[in-house]
Image (cartoon, rainbow, N blue to C red):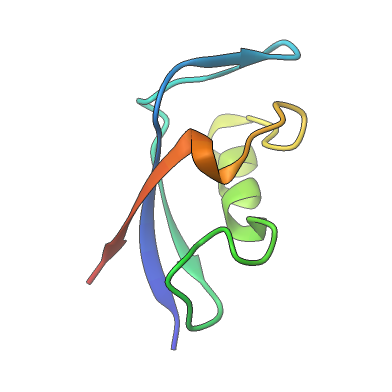
Length: 73
């Protein structure tokens, strides 16, 4: 059973020529049953940010602590 999460950055982050702002929220669906969208190296989150905002999650050295996430029903 897949789960849906809304992921929102906590603050503005400028690293390695990339900018992440709190307005850049995304909705991701995980492929496995989990309570944490970052469980598998944030694979779905990386893909969504690259597709929607052309933001490279890895290049910006992001971590779970940079984001708030809420499980949607």
